Amino acid sequence: MMTHLLILALLLCSAAAGNIKPRNTDSCVDRFNAARSSCEGRCSESYNPSNPCHCNNKCNQHRNCCQDYPTQCAGSDPGVSITDQEVLTVSGQIYSLDTNKATENEIRLNLQDHIANSQAVAKVDYAHQRLYTYVNEEVLFSRPTFAKFIALLNNYHRMTGIAEKFTVEQLTEQDAFIAEIMKTSIMDKLYRFLLSKKMYNSISEFEEDLKKMWFGLYSRASNTLDSSGFEHVFSGEVKRGIVSGFHSWIRFYLAEKRRELNYYSYSYNQRGNDYPNILATQFNWNGYYKEVGSGFIGSSPEFDFAIYTLCFIAKPNESCMVRLGGNTMNIQTYTWTKSTYGNGKKYVASAFPLTPQ
Image (tube, rainbow, N blue to C red):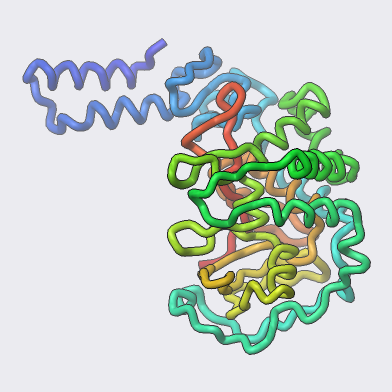
């Protein structure tokens, strides 16, 4: 059913077509698009794939709700939206359950020079030594979720425009990673919360959706299936000559150890009483520069995966406030808008901790 906004937009368009010119003949198109991007008058409507966003009780599950869905449709679809307070509560629980994270004695950093974000564009190497002076690989990387995560990192071409083609073994590694993190109390907590919100009906459905939203391929360049949420966020990519994504401390450490990455400086450091903390760095990755790259330091793979997934589902394309111990911070996620999977579900495009500008 058309809303009064749609009708108004179409009347304006008709008036323009009939040489009855409104003050701004382009406004009919703008108003038409604005109406299609709002839930005003559209709550509980049937799914229409031509709409850019949706307003039914499945849109949260599919991560394709219009931005004003929580306010416009709060009464018509009770219980399907996730509140800010719920995100704070669940994120705090996820933080407290991260028993696989590093201890203070298992990672040592050499931060060296701090710069303002405005200085990062200069691409100056202020650091004469590596960022990581010590990581207890024997303890941390022998843990099953770490080991399964690390096995995935060499499965990707970092250059966009080159198609990703996985072997049977590499696809099995994706399944093994999902299966391993699902054994943890962190992912169990996230699943049970989303189950309570009626976003999933079974753990197998949740696991399958995790695999598709994070590992499903889409095209960032050259109309080829060259990217995924996991590759972008955790492994890193190079697009148009600059580093894109690359928000994993494990990936950073291993690349620096292999002399593939040269640490330049840091522009933000949020340090709590223990890990994880949040660090924004500047670095050169085999000839390509990252101006500001933020990420958690010392967290487990399941923590990163859970906290990003929570925000991606609860607050897609928004700043998502989470609680880590006694502190709060914000995570930004983005959905991929140019292709979907399933019944209009969105892939992960990016996810990272926000740091002050």
